[in-house]
Length: 174
Image 1 (spheres, one colour):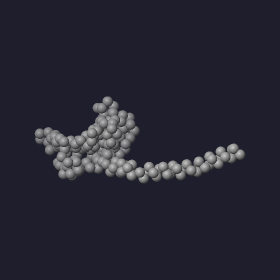
Image 2 (cartoon, rainbow, N blue to C red):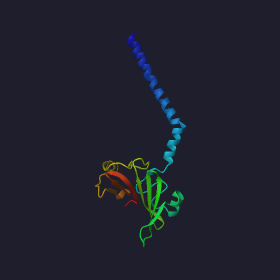
Image 3 (cartoon, rainbow, N blue to C red):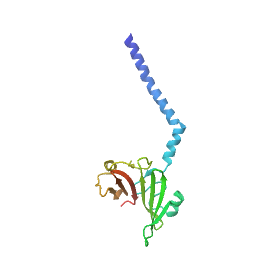
Image 4 (cartoon, rainbow, N blue to C red):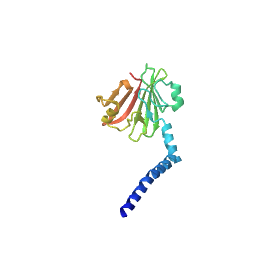
């Protein structure tokens, strides 16, 4: 008799557990504050696409489009006396700086420098502060040369400082 009660209680709990779990998930998903945060993050320009750039700053973008998106840069530096190239510098947030290489009034290169707490990440999952071997896991076998991993065919280069990812550079795929 006692064994029958234990079996009945066990079955009751087993049938109710999926219902309570489903209810808990629906409450979490429908939580409007949580939903707003997720939508804000997804709408943000935090994903770096290899060979392309960001949603708001991308290879081939005109100088006018760049300034419309990000405003005037914090710094504007000419590459050389006779050069028509410029580097525009922006501060995206406290943890991430952006440098945009401009030539003939078009974006040619994009470089992001960030700390571990930066929200920016590549589409494949590389984040600032990652060690070399993790980047190789995401992007494929490569040799570290001068603290850099270069993936020309993907349009991306990773620069390391003390073995940790510090700078992500984007350029047209070659």
